[in-house]
Length: 115
Length: 114
Image (tube, rainbow over all chains, first blue to last red):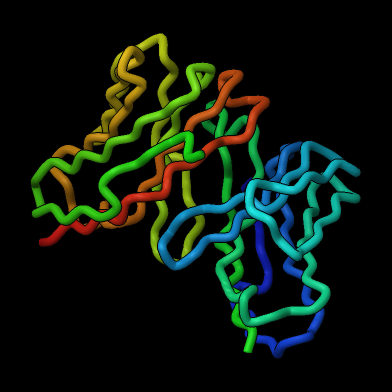
């Protein structure tokens, strides 16, 4: 079944550590996105990619970086984690869904806690 | 500048009642308006979507009403059930949605009491 996968689901890490949040999709979509979701629910776009070797910063400034070397893989990296990075991170892809309708497919998210 | 304004922020409805969530947009170039549903611990999932060539779209208990002149659209959940308790996001984009990023509303937390 086509889907989008994020690992890990939960991560608790110390300040200053380097982390990579993984995101892979089997949807066959070219476009992929990273959102940061705060406790108040709002979704903030932090990075997006329209294809291999294409990455752009989103609406919310973020200290994280992304790469898109393969169509199906869109990892997010924090070089030095800080408590202010504590949040829920959601990965998504967009394109035609199984029903034939256009839309976004989201992963289940990574809940990051930096202590 | 928030391009899609969603209200209310939270909503409590009794089982069997009607839940109504409203959204207003500013960009007249928007021509694709989806709604997403998010359960705790999950990512948002596409619930229903409408294009401006129709004023209403219904899928089961979920209906989108669209008012192009007022630049507003709303989600109605008929016969609301406790299983409908979730966060709902409206969104909008240009180009029929296929080539442009979605702009999301801030979300509405719906609680349906048994």
